[in-house]
Image (cartoon, rainbow, N blue to C red):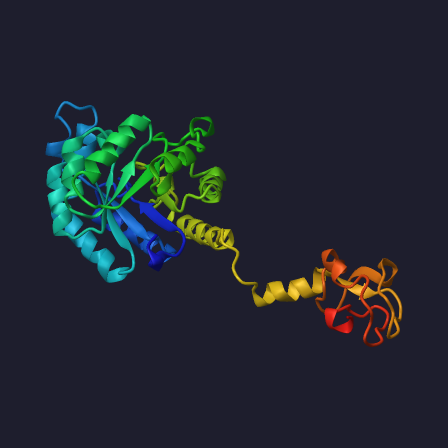
Length: 335
């Protein structure tokens, strides 16, 4: 994970929520940047190279397609206003890869529709940049083949992005446990693409579940105003909601911490002194007394002494000095 973004990488997916309008796209970028997103994701495509003219969505896509000049302006806007935020380009054909290289995007996303498209996989791989590979609704064999196409052409980092492409996604279709299978099978970072109903609490809960499962890349849709009910709005958070979401995700990541037992913090040391039980004297014990079970109590004290399971260090030993009742029992007090 990029150290600049801490233990979790949050991708703000703009998709087509810009409705083909430059100013709306900037508003979405502002929302992502102010929220502290790790990256903003652009969907860059050339309609003439991507969809046949008689496709049922051709006219709609034609109305919302941003020009190359628009994308240049938006990339410049991101770098000027939010230089810490990466730009990821979701691309569908070679001409858009060439253009994305010109505007110097930081990484690429490939849709699951191109998982079995070695021509695009290999072309993007040759850029050498990280590839976020969407693997929703794909077989393990398809994922494995796509990874091989990439690895055979470059050393590009690969993140596998899991999500069910339905807007919004019903919970009984998610099968989130499959993320662990994918992670263990391919030994690559796995991220969660959330498409749950933005109006429901699950829009926050499910990414939290993914974090708890060990997925430290979260992709979440963002829009300028969901009440507009535009394209890709069903799973998209408004800017204020996205800020709350990002804050939640980062706090959860901090709470998750590390699987490695670190040295005790000052707070933990204080807690141990307060709560852990130690061996204390059950009575005023004189010099020359041979310590027996009856001389010991297991109690909380004002400091840490020997824990109860170390009583064998004292039993049978002779006291070298008087030990007051309820005081900690220490090895140096006996011989």
